[in-house]
Image 1 (cartoon, helix red, strand yellow):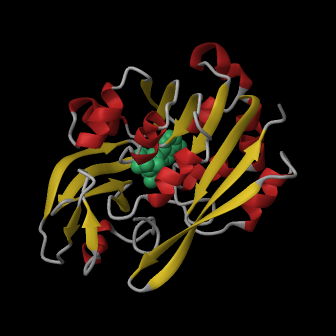
Image 2 (spheres, rainbow, N blue to C red):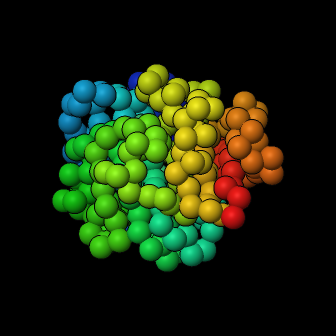
Length: 256
Ligand SMILES: C[S@@+](CC[C@H](N)C(=O)[O-])C[C@H]1O[C@@H](n2cnc3c(N)ncnc32)[C@H](O)[C@@H]1O
């Protein structure tokens, strides 16, 4: 689950208002959610980019980024759709944002050759290596995965190629709520036309750049259409409290 309450700029204590839903736990099974589930901190750290923490609430896992509730494991269709948008098999993939590991684990399930995951929150990578959640542990221990601490923006430039590798068959960006609703103000540059163009330049022929957004973003789609006139908007509908929300993915392809 993101946006609505998650992926907002509300203090994360507000996330305890997630109630009345059946929730899917990190074990993938459905469990009745309860507003009375007490939050349990699995791990937390202060970083130069703010607080990062993993919490459990019943069988739900929650991620706090920069002191803000970023996502939980209640509804992860859009994170998995992001992986699916890379195609099957996805080949060599660069992922901006580990989060709870749903996109990365789906890429592995889809047969990715290699997955480079970059995350600003270094402690999150350590917790993945330590297996603090089953899914993060599975991602970190897969021999196809390389976890990198740092800002994904630094991976866009052609100068980064000698040290960071590439080209990639897919670059998947899910580092924030999307360009209109940022957790880290500095991430504005990740969604800039210049950065998107640079990421597209790091793709192999026929490769795809896919960007997650918490709601449809005409400016983001327009920026990708300057790279690929046929760039697509893929809406991922989510039901919450009887209301429908659309998360959005934007996909541009480098000519083969
Ligand atoms: C919403 S989560 C990603 C969710 C992920 N797709 C999943 O399946 O669980 C966003 C992640 O991006 C990371 N992040 C934020 N800004 C970043 C940046 N500029 N570079 C790399 N990672 C960043 C956060 O620390 C967080 O782990």
